[in-house]
Image (tube, rainbow, N blue to C red; front, side):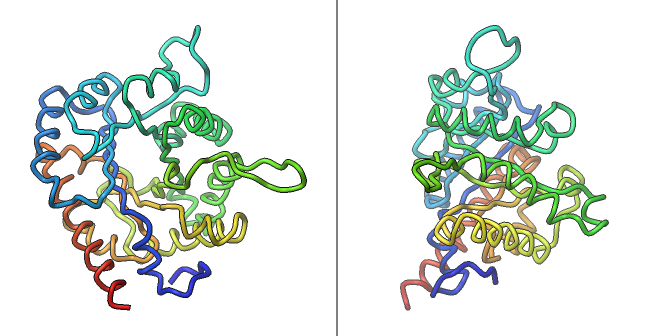
Length: 291
């Protein structure tokens, strides 16, 4: 169990953090999928009512999803936000344009953008701050490569990315540190081991839990137990309906960021995973009520 200061067992502390399910369509999808997913979200609303759900389609489909999906059931997020304001930045989408269109969330730091689109730690932090200032919520992605894991440097690599995100939120004034975030519900950390993204390989539940625990302990050490207990850390990396249950039962895994499973079978796999998460949420709440 992760060493966050608390008088409750880890799985009960987890139950106070609402489970989160994100679906990253990447460069996939079409108008037919928008329609199919909207139908699935509406049909399955009661089966996953306590799970916070967000879909991240291509920019081309943002407005269609905002118009098609009931925002009370599922929010819509953008896969990218510019660190620049409006102006002469061809191809960028600035933060206010997203919020003004009904978008509620943005992704920053996904490994595919870190690798090929120049998303350095500094750029990731800048985009996060711009989004939060515009009252957009943020998923910040962190994760190690296979080389870093095999060389024993997985935690060091993840902590470097984590520090860039967390430290950017804090500033010193009047002799004390304060953070520039309204609520820790506005920021979700997504641990995505690069070697498990789109490869069909997934970290074992034990591997995923170990890293999530290490991330939470780093936050506790550097930013205090209250932040560590409040912030949600989700897992991404070839999560499917058949392996999600073993992962979501781990103390420090608060949900998932799906890739392929967010669009497979016309959105049905997304609903299956949400339903499995709801079942475990119900169980933890039931256990907590008996104490």
